[in-house]
Amino acid sequence: MSPAQNRYDETSTVERKQRPTGSRSDSMARPPHRRRLDSAIDEYLSEVRANRSVRAAEHLRRLLDDFNQSCTKVYLHAIARRDLVEYMALLRERGLADRTIFNRLSSRLTFPRSFGIDGVLARRDLPRYVDKIVDAYSATEISQLLQAGEDRSRAAFGFFLATGCREQEVAHMAWSDVDFEQKIVQITAKPQWSWRPKDCEERFLPVPGWLVDVLKRLQKNDGHSSLIFPNQLGQPEGHSCRS
Image (cartoon, rainbow, N blue to C red; front, side):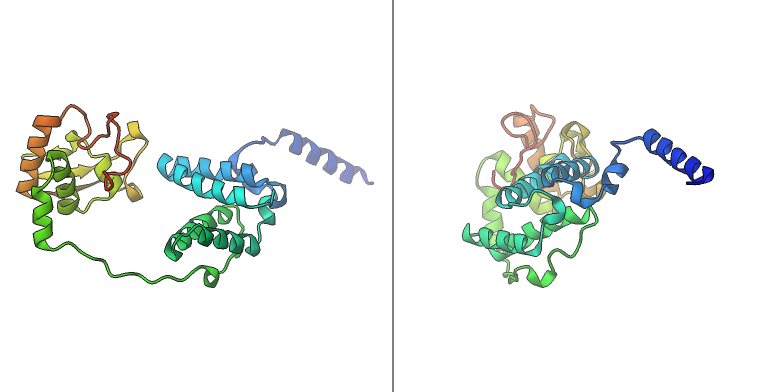
């Protein structure tokens, strides 16, 4: 070996020793065959939690853990088309609808893509489903719903109806977001609940006068929380539509 080549090798060795490890870039650069499936899931969910929301990470955790428990593979790169096809069959055995299976697999496929692994499952492999016609409430039914129940349920139903807000937007709506004089509400991030609007977009929405009156009555009779529609613990209601 020449002296020049020897110096090059020594320098390369020093650089490798001095290079910091443990960073996200180093982790992503690690060859896929050296990454365990369970540790890859943890790494992926850590990114989701940081870049999207805790709620999204928890949802994906349930989906990925369910797949991981049904899969016999240990390493991420070993996941093959057959593993996903067998998982789809398992979901059908549980009685899940084709649309639900499609949604779960679509969410599941974003996981290997984040590590540069694509093409494991083709779109034609995913189940096909038919979008059913939505059975909408009639004007009479809406009027009856707004008149029935107690103040909280009327206010919640009216809020969804008048604003078109998403479930989690309503769940995290605070009294400070309501301007009774201007008849508007604002969708704002709630860092104390680790929540932010979809696409990180805060916005203002007009509300009709009848909803303002309903909200005023609700605040007067049940406004002990900073949230408009809290759960029994005073925290955001996880399933406003079901409540």
